[in-house]
Length: 118
Image (cartoon, rainbow, N blue to C red; front, side):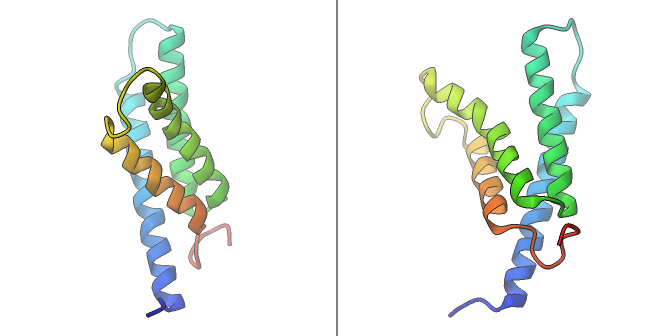
């Protein structure tokens, strides 16, 4: 049974709200806890968190969803790939892998009917 256009629009809206909201909250939490001396490691962590927050806000609003979703996948994917290159198992970070996959689904699905950028 094929999904109706209305069901697809609702699914894209809910996916967009979940992915964008989760990215905003996660990025804000990292930036809120930021303290200490400025080093390259801190700067890269803060940059990734800021990128996640901005991409999440764009997805949440429905502006440039495929682009923001693609950038979010890159921001979320880099720590996973870095871990895999250094010996971590593919399923070592299930939360990060899940966020990566739903971000990819959001990038592929687009903003839907109720996106501001439509």
